[in-house]
Length: 311
Image (cartoon, rainbow, N blue to C red; front, top):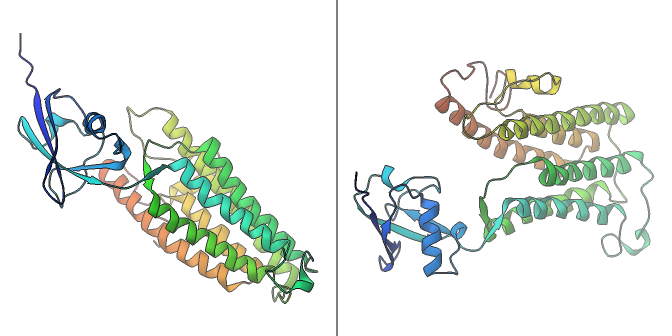
């Protein structure tokens, strides 16, 4: 019979190098997640999602599914701990980010007192595009909330509370800024009138439908199981055919929705929000595109990260 060799794990503070915990008789097949759970028993305030364990104080944090015996360590492993701070689950993160813009925009639409001058309190704009913009904005964030609750599949990952505050400030702040101008009593409708509004509305609806279709496709792909990892491919749904050309069509549709909304409202803050969103989503898309190319040798060469044939 082969004798099981157990590991010893020493956990040090990444800044002070002071020993925090010493674990003996750790199973060789234990994961970093298991080690975090054992460490949590000694320090209850540092729950697993709050911990970052590294093999080098300045190195990259180990993944929860990394197996101890597969790491470049001996039977006595030294790991360095860093406190990531208070964490919040992804579902709560997205609910916080999306609920704010939905409610904030409505405050400006209904012109609650003290936003504009007192004589405009609870008055309505005479331009139909203002009400249409409110409907589109509300629909967009209601869709996001529904997807967060019923469609998206989240891992056990979390986000630091300080990052959540920053993200909420970004989304909530932009919602207030663009809502202030679109619902302002002195707001003027788009230069080309109904033609501009109607065509923009059509593109907005198509992009929202496309974005939702992509999210459903990604959800179904993850729902097939985690044993055989696959890259997303087009289905019978025409909105998913954008997968022929880009790796992240959900971002393509998202950008399209905000560009069409900015044209519909002819509002500079909306255009700036769309531009900044495009920059961030391009970064995310390029990262996913590189991951797909690295993991799958048969990944289609025609695909670009976010814009067909361009970017």
